[in-house]
Image 1 (tube, rainbow, N blue to C red):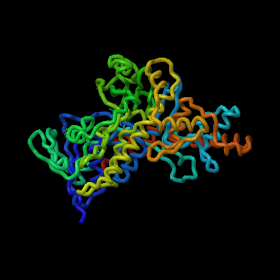
Image 2: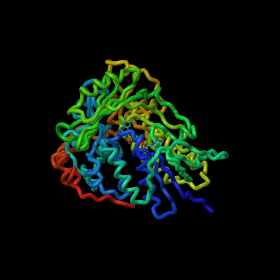
Image 3: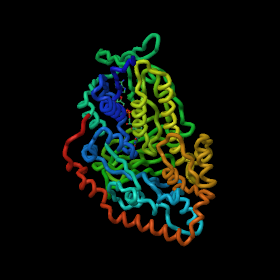
Length: 510
Ligand SMILES: Cc1cc2nc3c(=O)[nH]c(=O)nc-3n(C[C@H](O)[C@H](O)[C@H](O)COP(=O)(O)OP(=O)(O)OC[C@H]3O[C@@H](n4cnc5c(N)ncnc54)[C@H](O)[C@@H]3O)c2cc1C
């Protein structure tokens, strides 16, 4: 007889806590499982985390959340990718799009043909074969076509949203699904004397909360996974030394861009995330290379409009929890680890943590094989993201600061070293097991930061040159025509009822 889990306690009401509560309350709806979420308004949330990846759409869709309603309530905008400025060399600019660069031809990715064209003296940019890049450049947006024969189907999209409002939206959703919220601060944790499992937590007002399974969404504090269970932390600052960020919101100026921007500076990088009602900005850096005061000055002098908040300082240590799942505690969100937000991956890693937990949902026996598998999967997910982020830093040709030199001389993790080597010899992207970023993402960064391979797939030489030139021109024309047919981003938000003040106020449930 299986001994099913009857109670779950989620500690923390940030993005991680409420995403977990929403998903569990939906997926296990109708089953005898009580879900309780404890959060402390006094402690608050980390208050950043506004740029997402396209996968968040499937998360929202499986919860039956209406897109226009969610976008309106979270002041969200559409996101086609991330623009990187000054990363290879000062003055460089490229967009990492959520989509393809041209079609596959007889199983060969189009970029190999483009590499051949380039060797023949063609000067077209690879971007001209990518609809999402060209849409982003002209600040236009519409939904991808579901007819896969059309060029309009060759991209995906994500959101830029107000994270605080997203958590509030999911809170309302979860409470409608029966999740019980408790306000309070956990001040004590009781472990079982033999198994070491968490038996209960005690709140500041004296209440004791018991559960079979605890999900630690307490942010950087890791109240259960680390403070109580001492699961350990793998410090990755040898590769990604950034340990600080400063965040500030400002008024938006100019057109509403459907992309996030990451601008590399002498000693760190600055983000820009456009929402409907404001622009989120921040600066990520390492204290070894620059002081907090200097960062505040650079950040504030590079805002497009007047600041709406005072800069908020955050400290972190890059890395991952040694065990994401330890005994009867699963750490999801910042309590499980943190990688800087260069590729907007944290909310995605939360989503992965939740999806894997639901797939491997335990019984009261807590089978070690399931726990090991969860830890293996999440470990790989974190490593893949680490390598991808690191690529942006190491593929630099800058000579204007100690930080860039540091990255040029760094010993890379083997997995990344192998990936770059395969690319440089023949333009091959080795596919990883797990890992959110697919070949087009890697290609955009490698080429965007001037790492041109020495060779390409030999099959790309098979087509006669004239035919190749003509086909390439046809693709570029097709992309341009599709761009012309696409409305302006802000206009489209209004058209679908997602602009602030235009959508009906109904949220989904169960
Ligand atoms: C500088 C920076 C920029 C970022 N940008 C992005 C981005 O663009 N995209 C992205 O995907 N991610 C981004 N992230 C990550 C993102 O912010 C987080 O992944 C996300 O907000 C989830 O945080 P959390 O819920 O794990 O933690 P938090 O938001 O910190 O929430 C922790 C919760 O635990 C509660 N809590 C803590 N201790 C106790 C206690 N003892 N008792 C009771 N309650 C307690 C708190 O009250 C709070 O409710 C960024 C992070 C940083 C640091």
